[in-house]
Image (cartoon, rainbow, N blue to C red; front, side, top):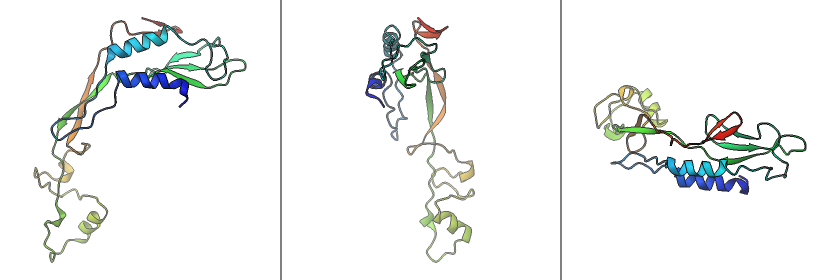
Length: 182
């Protein structure tokens, strides 16, 4: 990352701090401050750069300042005669969909429950050696088979169960027809 892009990423940490990890009692926490993000974006779009920070080429070619549709990032691209072709992140977009979680059972199966002299079938040995759980294995906690047990949860048993969509503030700057409008 170029030092000239650091302000965009530093500002992003203030309005969209990193996700906090889950605990056995609480799911991961995703925090987004849309009002602070709106103010940061307004500050950028009302003071857009007029030249490239890398090579000082003026931004007079079309599409030098754009907003990326998928991420909401505001970018400056050095284009035109004598340009360096580099890009610069001016604003880091915010995530407007936040995961919702539900608590599920963490699959546990104690392979040591077999007696030392008990014969374990060859496929079970192979599964155990490679860390793969056979589908018919029963969870020691809830009694469900492995193939019917929930998957995709974190180490504390929190599973994404959907997403909540956040509403952008009414004065959120939007890029239309080559310029930002509030």
